[in-house]
Length: 518
Image (cartoon, rainbow, N blue to C red):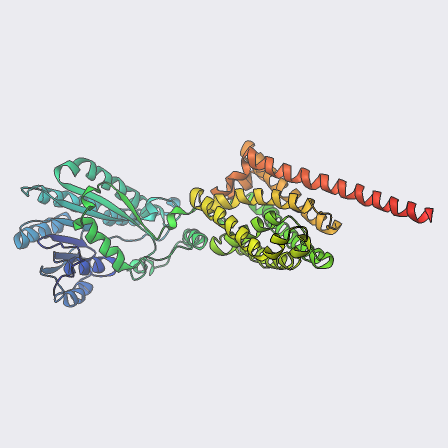
């Protein structure tokens, strides 16, 4: 077959891929064959080797293909394999340490030594052995240009995605990658690792035939359910391996751990879930859930009250800019950057729907407010659209700068304070709406104080649970600035309640005085 003009060429290169009879290893073999390389795969599964060999024998771009049944944990078997490669192709240019096995999510206290030795032998000792043999062959060339690719995992970056054995092996593989790259990079041998995320079509499930450690597996599922990672296509990963070893410009990449996970490890993996909470949390879990529910209920009632007063008084219930900024915030974090638990998402969605009602009443009644400014009166709808778009661009820019989670948190407190100030500029408010909003402020202050106290007093588990249990993106709540925002919000709300009561009492007294004067 002819090589496409945009295809990376591996012509003349010889590549060894471990675990090449299925899953990712097979996909990598296919892409190297298409690129014109001589490809050797090895696998311990003889049946799969035979099947894959028959499938790939006719698929090549000018190179040769060889499949070998071999145990990569055997020093003698790997030495024989390398001798065969030298005999058939004279040298070895590329090594892909792909073969690996999974543990059963066992934590260290329940880990059997047989499982430990087996996982470490396949996932770490074998890549070390093959790297040792491969580097020796690569350095024999007059102008060495070797490449080793170690298939690692996101488990090399965290502790809750597998058991103790697998996690340790992948952390060790990263260390092997960097040590190899540091010593042999200047001598013409590069070594990099791919930290793989979720992939479909691999053989990893074979390790779970005899069951799993339920708690360990559940912890992994909790992490995945929280970040909802997208899966990587095997063909794309395989193409990356070809480019990394033979592509233009990749020769400067050495000692890198490349995240191949659709970006999901850029999200926090410290996900809120009861299984990750300290034992003390179980006694007070209802506090956090109640706080979220009360805040969601409070803003729901607040929006309903705004719609009611707008329709009743034929006006909009707050200043135009604050209204547009708040609506843009709801759209940004309910539609563009949705996150959180089902409860948190339902709060965002309900807030957005009710905000649509608030915006409708505002657009409908705004012309009555601008009779003194005909230009604004005639273009009020356009002004609303431009203002919302402008504020959305600001929210999105901040999210791109500091990350959606942090941007959502800080713009929330900013919008809330401006939102409340906008409402306070209008007397069309009733005690029910004010009371609910005041309850929201008190709830937020209580939660913040608990987090702040928990960060200072580690002996008090009733407050510590929030600091220990919440995601890292919630740690902003322990900052003095955030506490100031909440206290300022509470002060505004409280002062408005007092002013509202004084004004209403004055109006009532004035009305009674006029009646008596008649």
